Amino acid sequence: MAQLTAYRYIVTDDRILSGEPIIGGTRTPVRAIVELWRQGVTPESIPSRLPHLTLAQVFAALSYYSDHQEEINAAIERNRIPDNLIDPLFQPK
Image 1 (cartoon, rainbow, N blue to C red):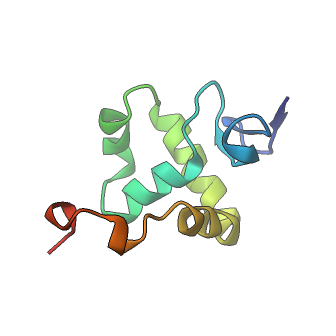
Image 2 (cartoon, helix red, strand yellow):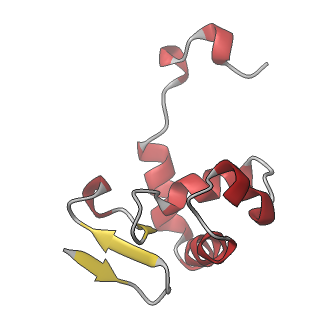
């Protein structure tokens, strides 16, 4: 069952991504938005890469991250693909 958070667009649901914070009504985790932002994508540009999201949802995710950095950073690390499993053709130079 979806659990509301103090952030308008952010919910958790044990049935989706093991309860990781997501944008409500989607399966998009907060960490996906944070990772794009960390790569230098501006918040205003993220909806063009994830067109099912609104700018308000993106800012809610970044606000959630600001208050829960340890939790989201741990989720990012848990979902990181080890370098040795990435095809060398796709590794950054």
